[in-house]
Length: 397
Image (cartoon, rainbow, N blue to C red):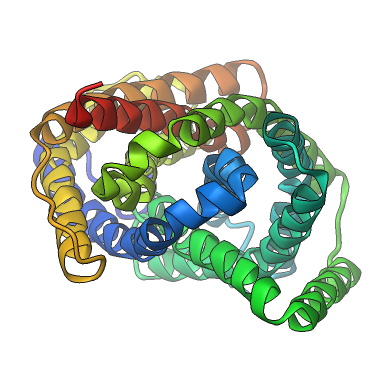
């Protein structure tokens, strides 16, 4: 029996490689450029955050990952819904429902990360301010990312392009692009114009209430919310390890400025490769069950993406060096340990994505809701440890 095939996909390895270079690579390259906006802002403000708002460094990897997880999962759900004919337009009510679920789904793990950061760093007054900054910025970002996710999922599908190849990577990178600058600028807004900051915070909560009013949440949505919130709550605990590692090694990383610039890109790109495999595997499982995954096509998916990892690694390092030289005015070059080690981390995480998707499906959990959050969290932990290793090896610790 011929299994269903998602729109715009190829079954041969040659076709997969072409697909990787014509669809995935441009999307990943765009992601890379977007990531360096956040990376530049982080690099320029890294020491200030470490000294005055250390709790932000504790929760930063989790914040970045939560956004990518939530809206990456939303992209995967919308892709499945498109293939099944459940939605046809970004104006559909189901899109609004998913936006609301995505915004609300981040709040529980967000508070968990904040609580862990409070116990680790202390200073309740600063921590409460950071919580307000994080929650209000989360609503602002959620509204932008929610409808952006729908846009970059529905439009490619209508053009005959497989959204699984581009939607999850793009939305996780857009989330990183928005998360770090928004967080930093909300901090700066508070420092320079406190009354303006509080006005914006109140406005965000009013907009959230308006979205709740127009949404139409049913039992299926509540199940989705329960699955996503439960998974993200567990992952937030894992993510706190990455945040604690980043904060405790902040002095080491600040001595190798290029790594703080590269940090968002490393975490995001490793997660992006894994998210593509997670989304493609999830779609296969929904359309054809586990038999659709047990094929040479799955290995072709992984192998074709692996081919472009050295190029992504070199571009990541090269762009970071240009940012550091011409924007931050410091010298930097190619880190060959990064170039060599990066493909191995990506390959490991892609296999983890495949395995987690199948396990989720077999235990009756929707892989659209569980796999991308899980694998991007693992990517964040491994990426953070990789960055710390690189920093210590460069300065000789």
